[in-house]
Image (cartoon, rainbow, N blue to C red):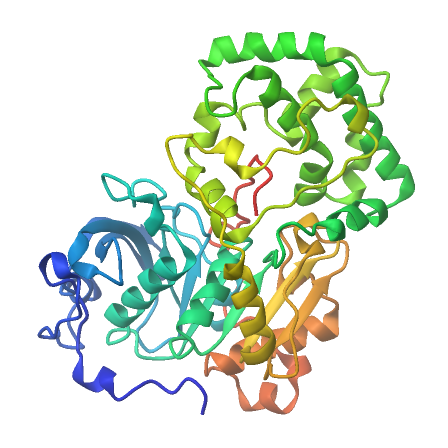
Length: 472
């Protein structure tokens, strides 16, 4: 069967860091009946930040020592944060990544609820505090991040010995895909949500076609009109922006100046609406005749005026660096405001401090796209019909096996299996249960009977917080 674990796991009990080399070493395993906290902390390189109580689970916030460069592990180490939502070692485990910072509040991804399992969540390298010091930015790439996940998996697999699934939304879905591409034997399945696939960075016409068709003409016209009005009124609205920047202490060294930041925020407006809102929310957009304050407040609500300040950009420097070196980024035409733009749609280079060198690697996404088309095995992609990031999705080719791409009607960047049409929702749930090894005989015989194994929990299963910025 695909992805059967190597006999090596029978020999290597725990994987850890041996000094600065960061190579795998054998360690004496804590007995299986030892408290889970002790078993986790017996892993070389693992340390506890805190344990938080949650009914039915144990929740740990941890640090793990990783090589800065997995290809040259003696070149130094850094500590990477992760969390473990522990249910039972007899349950499957879901490996979750957001592609950004890790939340230290207990939460559960949709696949974790579906399989009623454990969840390991990993902070993406170079998002603080999981950043080497000093930071060699050339070591921030998709292969190094995949190798981070691989080492964490190898360290935890002796404890969580049942099946594993990788998951994540948006950049996290991209991350789960890249992990599968570079370590296809680790996971028993992948569930990737709203994952963009920018294969050719210079070809972005799919996004322009999306904005010509999304929603209804009435809604598109309303959004376009208020976006245009925000640029027609650039000077009075910029004055409000400058006053707020002074109050908040925002500066604009990275992007250049407040005018560039203002235009970037307004240019994101329509994209930001469709990414985070629904067609039913279109009526909330102010009319073009609204007051300056009404337009300013709505632009702030949708795009966030803090987004392109130095303070807003600092958290996301690793994302913009990757967008400008490997992931690619969309450039849209915005014909309804083109005559009012001074700088055009700005590239990631404008949002990363100039002290950090960047060079784009066009082969990175082509490699991943080709691999998914030819080798995807037990991979499931979920997109939202009205999500701009879905304009360039992953596609499956003839070499794909037991893999699927579904689109949730009317959904935005928060699309889930739960939002699929009933037949697809049941089928996708059944496949996830099967990959995790927890499908019942009834579901195997009749996939339409598939349901999540864990009841909905209002706190654990809440949606991820919305982020400003035009980011996946």
